[in-house]
Length: 463
Image (cartoon, rainbow, N blue to C red; front, side):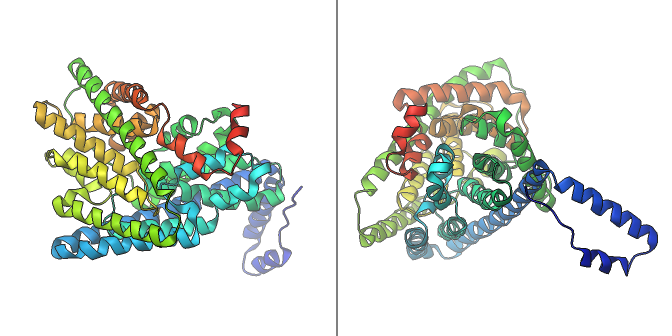
């Protein structure tokens, strides 16, 4: 067992500058600390607290940099419209190069990598899991995603934040297990992923539901690590940024039963659209896997950048994460034109096939918001803000097949609990309709790409 020792030299040095009463209090505190740290459970708790503090701090800094660079892109493209034609392709090429040459495990969203690491047996695949969640991957993830953000790519920071947080937790967990070898390696991955989601969206309940629904964990087994990590990461986020809502508090009139048929309609349409979006990513990544040389992949990244620049030329709202678009639809009374949902979906697909690091959480929410906003104006429906929220939950569910995570996220991001039944109904309907088109979610399919050969057969035997 690891023994904690208090350095007597520091105690003697402290005694020289303290009065007798303070010395007695210091001595008593040190003895209590020594007794506390003798217990392995306490040491493990402190390690989780430190991991959550570190992950929360990194998540806040990362979110701030992402926001600054995205704002810089929009300002630069507004002042110098021609910039997108060379700036966007070069940024995508640089983002792809970071991933290709330094850490291929950092490509894409990051959630499939975390799911793969969680599903694998650490005793048999420790080197592989360490590669998926290494500090090098964390650094490359941050740099690559910020580069493409500077280029106005249709990407988000939320998925990358989950892999970044899981990587930081995994790093601290590896050090902790040198002193406490009985600590469960999976606990660090689960807690890190949940803390990352909670810090990215400021949604603590969403983090817990994500861990249970997406990672299929037993809450009783991981509850202490989960709750500690989410609370600390959330407190760090609010300590720096203050108390805030990810989407703000849009004005929504009283939700009556008359909105439930609309919730069903939007759930069906956005669920099918989200499922089709996932199918398209699978097809595109399957085609991309046939490209073998770095020259071909580099040219693909440049072509994707040019395609994104063309979409931004057609409609400036088709670029970026989509947070500004969601804000305009929810708070400024704007309505999405017919082309915006198509451009947002196509832009996310084009970016993802480039091979750079970046997420699809925020783009999926923006695509759902645009799709439901266009339906609202086309059909002349009332309560446009509520229907935008329904579309966000429905499209995200269609992509991820996690309806509970989707509606809890929307509720926590807006604090509109009066709409809970409508959002829940829409998410459940979207999940059922999405399975008509494709029974397997994008994340379920994509995690296999980050597993070692032969591991899928082993997993099926244990399911």
